Image 1 (spheres, protein in one colour):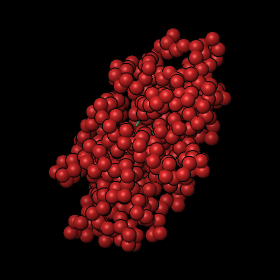
Image 2: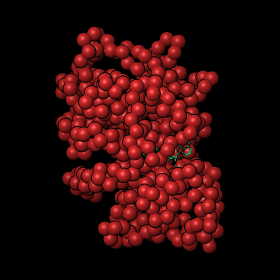
Image 3: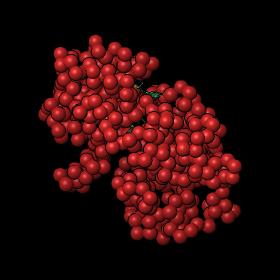
Image 4: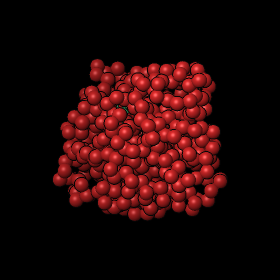
Length: 413
Ligand SMILES: NC(=O)c1ccc[n+]([C@@H]2O[C@H](COP(=O)([O-])OP(=O)(O)OC[C@H]3O[C@@H](n4cnc5c(N)ncnc54)[C@H](OP(=O)(O)O)[C@@H]3O)[C@@H](O)[C@H]2O)c1
């Protein structure tokens, strides 16, 4: 632990849409200090590195959206004249870190942890006194709905069966873990419904990790020859990403957004929407309304890669209203709710066993999919973020960011 009574923190802060700042997407690196003499039941985590993908941009876009409130997980620092929790938010990131100070009786400095952190060098969080076990401990957030508990969990790597104690293992975990389990339980759910009788899957933003993990899982089940799993898997993507998406080899066909009308056959389709693009969805639903083009048996909203980081639309979305109200066939998939159902159908041992098998296979299979790119140092990370705002994500790159300079992140980098 540092010897002084405070540590200097750096955080990448994002303007809150409600603050109506001049530049709605200008990120700021703010320096603040954190006392190392902690209040009772707190831990100070050195956030060593974290993944950054369209998933985090969606968190940002929905930062103030009343249903999601992603800016209410970690308050921005208060730095006079620069940033404050009222004007800025911290976009949650999935990352690895080490406990550097603890005032909790069951948590000691030096422990490696994985969780839903902030894009900063250090993170000070309270820990429920009674809510710490061998596997995890929890950040109490009584201001947020109880169903956000999975986000409050900080996993203790030493007892985590999915933990791979290498730099590569950690990097792949940060990139895939938040997305893969959504794809995994989504596929489990829709398969349990007999794929709703569909013969084909159509997946938008097919180049996104969430999308191609879903394609991978559907394909794996098909290759195991499980009953009723013989479906076609079609990816829908932008022109610039078509080559990458085809190269993955996870889709039977990859079709460009502009040309799906002539490319889709007369089958029974499940549409998995990872793009959340209203214009595309209007065109798709219109296309399937003419039955001679095939039948859309259901569509499931899984992502919103189309949302810009500071999208005004996102802040004002009313989540109680179906975004695609003109279609009665849109379903939302809620992983937590489905897992609750599964816990009554399968033993915990069976659930963990299935997850561990799937995770081990993924850790081997995913190696060729994307190239890892590490960005270290606060200014470099800010620049990398600005590039994303300007040009979007390149799907072939998996970003691992750290606000620490190379030398400060230890041997693991
Ligand atoms: N429901 C859940 O619980 C859950 C869980 C995990 C993730 N998700 C969601 O799934 C989505 C995908 O996340 P990810 O991390 O897998 O994505 P990713 O791998 O970072 O995907 C990047 C893709 O997003 C699209 N994209 C990037 N910039 C864009 C822009 N400026 N405009 C339009 N499209 C752009 C492109 O795909 P195309 O060219 O192929 O469109 C790009 O290849 C996110 O919205 C995330 O929130 C949801």
